[in-house]
Amino acid sequence: MIVSKKHKFVFLKTPKTGGSSLEFYLSQFCDKHDIITPLLPNEEKRKKKLSLLNSRNYKIKKFNFKNFKKFKILRKVVLNDHSSLKVLENDIKLNLNNYYIFAFIRNPYNWIVSFFLWQLFFYKTFNVEQINKLSKKEINLLFRLFLTTRCAGIFYEIKQIIFSKKYKVNIFRYEEYKENVKKLKKLLNLEKEKISIDKVNLKRLSINPNIQKKIRFGKKDIEIIKTEAKYIFDRYNYSRSVPKNFAN
Image (cartoon, rainbow, N blue to C red; front, side, top):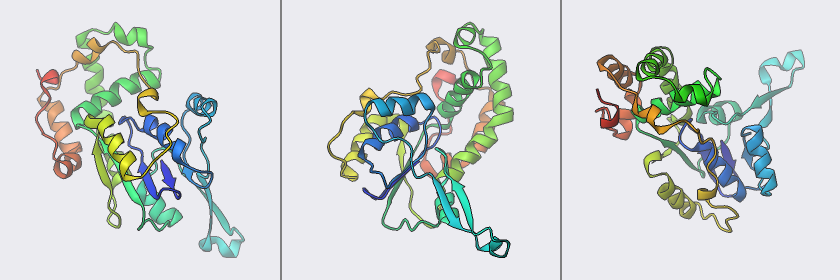
């Protein structure tokens, strides 16, 4: 997440939509008063080497009127990279009427596959070499388990990040990522670029592309996605048909 008081924008970072790369890129246009949530330690080190602003101002102290009598006058609100707009509205109570608020989304089928492969790696279920050796049957058994246990929570979290009754959230598609980043640069009047978005490229997995090609959505899997990603399908007009590369 970034809240730029300088350029009057709020970037809401949804998972697996190039969000870390975009936060890295946008940090070059921020100043010391802006809110920039932390990336992974190695990514923060890379920012420092490039003389880009590191994470800052994401720990915010607010008056705690409920515990005033107990002399607990202050409470701390800690923002993270996937904090929701509701946190800014309700916990920090920022007035965002003059801010351009935006986020990225993607096709729910591709989105959930990206989550699946990332979490296999990130939570050290397997190392990359082991993942690349999984058979079609093995990868689909793991994918089925992931869908039934994690799918609902993931799409609920995404909705919580971007949903607001009070403010307009401008949504961009991950499928046109670089074109949309260029549009944002113009919309937000971001000048004097130190590093282009093409040169950021964080969190690239070295998983063999053939592994993703082995994944298939059965009828039950499709129904799970249609149900749990209903908000994305309904509001942002993605096709409910499974992409051909994942069809049985």
